[in-house]
Length: 112
Image 1: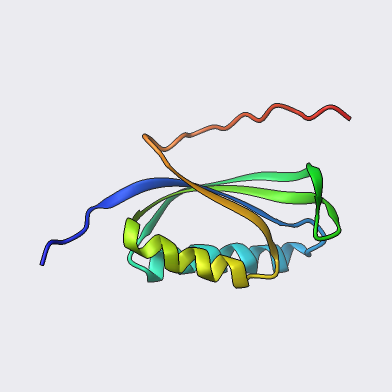
Image 2 (image 1 turned 135 degrees about the vertical axis):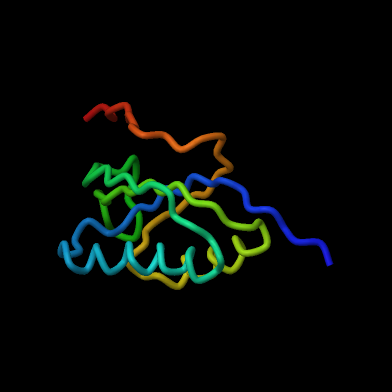
């Protein structure tokens, strides 16, 4: 049986901005715990703070953004995505393959 190789991924997670700092921390821990329990490893976590959303999502106009760099096998991603859909505090998520772990991130501001 061939062992799957781990791939580096960049995940962006938008949490509900109305969460308290403790609830937000627990929601992020739930995400990172899911990655590590599925055999992955979180390399870097960027807290990008509260930002205005481009459009309303589930009644929210703002979200708290996090970007995580992690390694995982491709077969485990589907299980992670299923778990993300069950997380009520998570407004949106996106997972992309990454070439390297970025130490700093820059976002362009949306016009008011």
